[in-house]
Image (cartoon, rainbow, N blue to C red; front, side):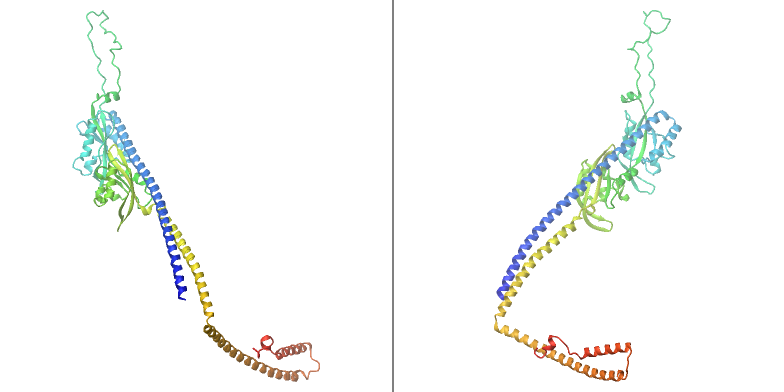
Length: 485
């Protein structure tokens, strides 16, 4: 018995060891496959977000360039309409202001060569209305460039901040275009007639083709700097409308963040409106997140790419989770910006979806290995038990003990059976007495009837048949040989 137990334990240990090794190998294969699938999902999603960031960058550049062309066209119109007159110029600006306001224009100003305001779109210029003490340095620099420009074209300032009606810091920039004085036709040269000229009635001789000056367009004169710079059209531009349009590009998921970052890491657009106008270094705590700081610096430096970093989930939950970010440079006329999209890895579509499938495969494999272990071991155990039982049967004492137990059980069953037989025979005797009494009652009841009716005859036959049936003893092998058994 002890040897069989030792053999069984050895075989069970071998089966368990082999199964554990196979299961560990399967788990490693499943883990590698799951990580590979997840890497492909994350890589594909990052590439799509990188493309989306590039679209944001391209749209930002196109919008600023389009707005610059509008300002340039307005400056060209001001050259003809204004011509030093305030009233027509202000009417022109008032008509154009609703069109410019759709793109975020806050005011339209016309400055002369000294920087004095000649005309504006409103009763009070933008900077005074915001309670600013003079123009920001970025706006002053762009204004100076426009006033001294020798060629047509829009001039953009760096981004600066202003306070809106809710006294909140908002990003803006200034777009200016030079206004040139209309060219005056050059005076015709007057040459004295030579002394030896024949008399022609005092008329000057016709000019030869070489002496006639060619007509020049204002653009050609402007390119050569021959036009006088009369002033500049200046338009302060809020970046809120452009920010709203950028947010609509990729605002499908709630926790995904869309960002546009300007010079000095100023947030120009963000999915959280309260962050606009703040520094990204403060909002995203770049000093405590070196990986994120490195990516922001690369984006501001004009590079694009993707990165992963850990950052708090947001809200009241300060637990740091894994985020991904795709960024692209935005080389605008107003300076080098950066467009970025960040997202939690848990929100990536299909990321982690296969986890339950892989876990299901692992559990099925575990159940299969357990079954493959249990079935052979159970069969082996049954064989060992059979051998043990055979060994027991060879033992005389064990066999006698079994037979003694069986004999006792049969004796008890026989005693119970005899008691049941006696009860049945007693009931049979009682039935016979009852039948005898019933027969006498029938004779007394029907014996006096000479001619019974049909119904009475049927009743008599039924009673007779029941009486004969009750008079019969129990039949069968058991009752015939009850005494022998």
